[in-house]
Image (cartoon, rainbow, N blue to C red):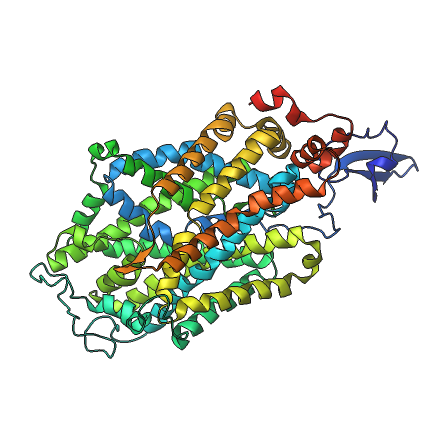
Length: 615
């Protein structure tokens, strides 16, 4: 049997009529199959097949080894440390089970639609966060915005992983170092009974608190952000190990990272289940879980509860970092991105809810053990996973084993999320600057080393002040702004109807009216509301009682603005580099690059009323 492939353009129109498609994914091919029978008669059959998809540079685009690799990568990125230390506390603080009402409401009207939108955008255009904006060139600046945000987050997120690694190494001892107050780093205020209600001195601290602040961070050796000191070699070494792990997980692209997530994305579920089984057997655990699930519908009358639910949705799913776009760009063209969006976003929310049982079983135990109200031990953020949880684990039989298990879970939770952020940066820039495609290994090395060098500021004696500043400004208002511009660019300028056609071309059916209405109206309004709330409720950063100087606040705002300003800067650049009248330049700037020939003929969809009103 003979097989051959020739471009459609070389065949007779009778065999395969040429179809002009402005959304072309590349020329289609006809596969000729010649079957020679024994009587010498040849029968020829032909079928249309999709060619190997390549980038404009001619380099074939890599694809995931399997669909499971992609799903685990997305889940691993979206399910991160915040699922453990943020959501359970918010749920407890804002009415328990009643908090699920606004949370699920915003998940349905904004979270899932935006998640679906980014997966479809990346899969159809098969490029990173900047390259996908060939569908509306004037908005390419938002691609650079999300790339910068991912880079900034990497500066401090890797430091959290290095803390977890430091705790992991410290757990390989017969007695955990945060149990007693007789260590070299302890102060006179250290007390093993600091949680006890009979202790009225608010300056007293537990061994676990002092171990984190004084034994790990050494913040007692710094007076503030203007007194950082040198990087501490212990944390620097841990940070170096994290960077090495990230490099060898990313250097070959999704073929290697897709295998790493089989461990990093699944291990947290195993550990969470083990910890839950152990946690519910502890005294007071049931009381903690009851407090977690207690329903107070009166809290729903408080606007702050709804704002916190909306904020949690915005940040927990990971939209706006360019990661979902980068990951889905390595999918096969006809992959069912709709199904993947529903599965992965649902798993993310269920993981947050499930982790609450684990967290509050141990918090209930701590409350019972120290005979104090649950409010006194319940907290979120780094204080939960590096102070409260280690202290609870230290009281268990075989505490070192449980500590190793817990901090290994934190390590895996952090690594795959950090991998996603770095992949967003690498894919986004490689796809935009084609000369880097043949040097991915070197470029990946450059990115991770740059991240490592910047992160050194966070592992100094005063590194926690830098960490808090970055955490406050790097991905707050700027990420909400980025997703808002992204939603407007796709739903209004590119067009919901056109975007729906793209999805139909991939998965065989158009998104329903619900999804189109969310993309066109609901999600942009939701994001605009969140941006306004973010500005109006702004509070300057602080760490404990430390107030940042004015110059530090200005530096933080410069960091936030540096990513957001890419949107107007690139729009101005694009308009200035195009030729013709202002209307001509605007027409080219808002029209997909594959339709510029229509602009030459005076056909601009965005200049028609139908484009703006159709859903």
